[in-house]
Length: 438
Image (cartoon, rainbow, N blue to C red; front, side, top):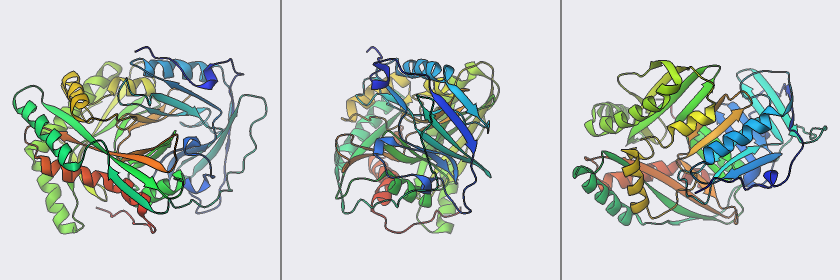
């Protein structure tokens, strides 16, 4: 399929992007997410972890591309936009100056496609440094007061329904995958399932972001073009020549009893099934980054990452960039990793198409941001949901599990249920549920 831009910003020539970044001194106790004003789900952007990151609103420019060349189309568009931009940057940090937020479909043939959005306003924080960037396509930047916002609105009554497959049907798909793996057709496949959500009130992205940040502070809380979630997995970060990636594969559900959870963490670290799944994922990331990096550091053993609802085997891979590859191009080289697809990639991807009976959309695809220098952060869109563009009372939630020869279908259903909890709770919670410290 040919990759073609489809946004209005590409149907006619536009004036060069004008971007201005200045330092900001917010009041004590201000949070990035609290600055977001009420706007449409598609025009609210976020990439926040432990209070640091970027939020944005409005839409100065955007582009959507489809097909196998969608990454390259976005890369070319951003190179042209950022390269011709008129920039005044008084802060000069990664994420200052013009920034584009992106969400990219898992599959090349997905109707969701891949989108980059340049917000009208971006507010950023890194430690005690704050800034605001305004963009426009004329000489006058938009007027903005980042200290003014309105309260997020709860979605009201929420109903959940099975998506493409019921839990029992999905367990059957897992069983079939295990049969194929045991027969030697492949080593691992990641199968996902979906839930359909309907809400009484229109879904306010800020409500979801706030609840996710309160409960899952160690994740990256994101929103781009109606895709919202809290991912624990950093696909790739590029910052001043250093490339890092956090790989998660191998999961166990927490019980809420700290002593029991420590025992479960120890069992996870010894589990041959989970270690095998994790090894495939780490190997796929290291092999994809190797052509672009030197001095690669790939730890021999994973550590256990504790989140509120689950624990994961995790490995941080790092390297020194040896070429000018951008963060978006690095994300393209890594997608899809074994953590969201399987091994071998082509066989696993074919089995996903056969057994899932759904379009993943932008679930399990790269989501994040890129600046004019090519630096940026791209996570994998996990623990997430997509607000329907045509109906902001509807949302699809997604969760997936890595399937290997030792997988048990009923256990995988339970794991997928655990991975759906963050978004389900964010939709229905009325009070914060702080994240436990492991």
